[in-house]
Image (cartoon, rainbow over the protein chains, first blue to last red):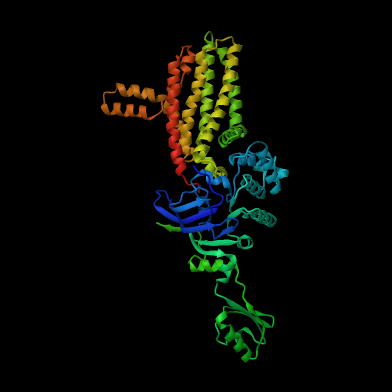
Length: 326
Length: 255
């Protein structure tokens, strides 16, 4: 058996799909993932964004060999995910992590270190180091059953970091944390990236993805519907202009007959959003009608809008979960 | 410490910190010590009664604990998702399962040794003879528990704790009756009954092969070949059951 190569791309997946059989007679199927391609290069923070049931956790579970794909291939550092050795370079925090409650924080992280191949003085030193880095040194002797959710999340991150992973896979790492906890988790992820660690994480919290990711994939209904850097994805959307008009009311502006994306009446002003191609006509129309253009600038297209558009395009604006066949 | 040892010792530590194990352990000690009361109502054969009662109690209590521990060994890890944080390390599922079994057998072994020491202490206290068969009966019990643990783990690899516990309990009773089943079938005039009885005999583990408690009670000797063939028999059954459990466990999705 050859060891995983740290030079190979940390994550490569092609054509992954997963179908679960459900129901008492296993006669219904749920397509949790369909034709998922994914490549994460070294040093990136890569986000999987999607609503509940989009296939984010299934993708992660396939990568961690917790779930077997129904088709396709997944490799970590060039080796198939079924090979336990691939996980020597990986740290993993599942959604709602559940460490052994009868252990203390230190005992649990020590166990994780032993499973990652550390021993003796090196293990002791490393455990102290990671517990300190997640600010759990003060509570390390308490049994985990006495921990709050935030403390459990931190100790779970500590066990993921103890083996000095080259790849961190985090499933909803900020879910359920208070604003301070979320901020600290984000800082820890960025600190790991600064050390050269590759990070894959999934979330449905858009600001987290926007503030952390170099690249991201948007998943809806088990399919990848967008992929690219945040900048690329946002700028690839149909551009529009934001215009603030004075001296006219909403009705007068609508009366110009130019298609408007949105109209918002403000105190003595009207704020409009118009497609870029129609902006010059709107400008001429407003000036011709005696109005004044107070401001005109490219509208900022947020990741949230991208996400909502992706949901609408896939016809799943409000639904969650995979595709169910009976 | 290797990953395997770390998981095995953790299994032992879990059992040690589990209230049920502690309560059962204390209960076992109390019951064994109270067996001295039995001698009050026995006229002449109190050493036989003491052996019968002592070994019987050890068997009953440890079988209960085995069913409790093994039937939820894997299913509880999957249900509570504690398994996610372990199998995401460079540890194969096979290693995980074997280490959990080893931890379980270590726990049962330690309890068995402690109970045997209390039992032997009682025998010494009452000036009763300590025989090799009593020690073999105690050792045989560990191999019986090994088969039962393997059954529990096999069912635990695909079913919930309740199903697994029922199946293991059922296997305990049928395992002690397969010999009788074989004898009854042999005496039947119906060929079909004979075939069914004999098939069941060979399909199910015969726990009487490692049950030397009756011989210990009546101070009968057990020769080495009988003991070793019983040990080999139980190891073979454990191997088959655990191989099946591994085959199922390696294909499972942890959702």
